[in-house]
Amino acid sequence: MIKTNTNRLLLDLIKYPIITDKTTKAIEDNQYCFAVERKANKIDIKEAIEYIFNVRVKKVNTTNTPVKKRRVGKFIGKKANHKKAIIKLHDKYTINLFPEN
Image 1 (cartoon, helix red, strand yellow):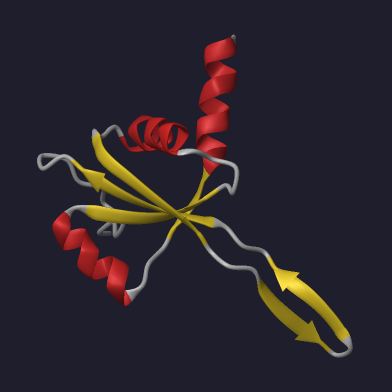
Image 2 (image 1 turned 90 degrees about the vertical axis):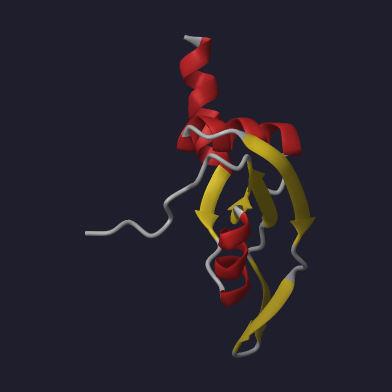
């Protein structure tokens, strides 16, 4: 029962992969970037990636993205931000972010 709840938390931890020119180039070095929950730590991120993609993680680097202000008319608000996790995998593992149809 607890195991199922833990797995659900791990799935909710990872939001989406970050796909830019820089991160696409980093995929050649077996590094992947993901947006994760702000309160997630490196150990939780490592467990989540290993559970979701069935790979072995070698290293996890994280960075908090700065808050960006957005204006709509006279209202000023904050854009939702996330923590960026850069995941380095062991050499024999890969994650297929671009599935072929």
